[in-house]
Length: 186
Image 1: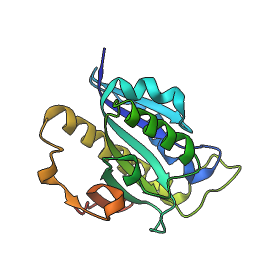
Image 2: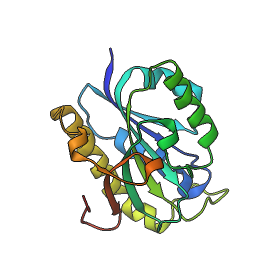
Image 3: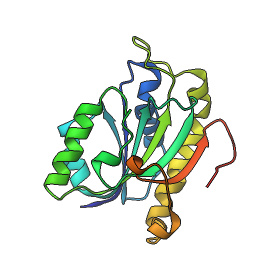
Image 4: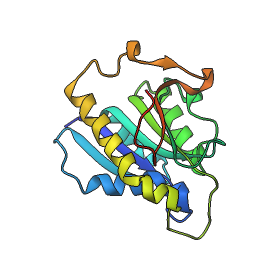
């Protein structure tokens, strides 16, 4: 059966905040979801994820980014092409970009929405999130859950008329906020 929405968290949990996508996916996996939603811990990405991506209509990708924004800043993007993903994707960037390029070449790239979570640095040899990201994890997961359910409930939810263009190389922005803030700036 084809998955309507795949929530895919990627990152390396052995490198602190760089694993925020995996931490979010693991938290979201514990929640009840409609049958049309799959939540997946994608680890450090790579071609083993191809089958999951090919079988999804829409993908919500959660990943850390080293983008010089304050830690905990979340940008909800809709990259249309691989080149529109933030240039500073985290340490598994090469495998993930290769996978997305491959799916593009095969004309099998699903619609992707990226929750890019800004981090200050990649910490080695720690499985703990920084206090900023740990304290904001619940808010991030709630936003992702609401977004996923909106994709299912309203097919026009993500039409271009609801988007504002941002930097040319980073797709289109849906929201920009800090996870320890209670208000979204849509």
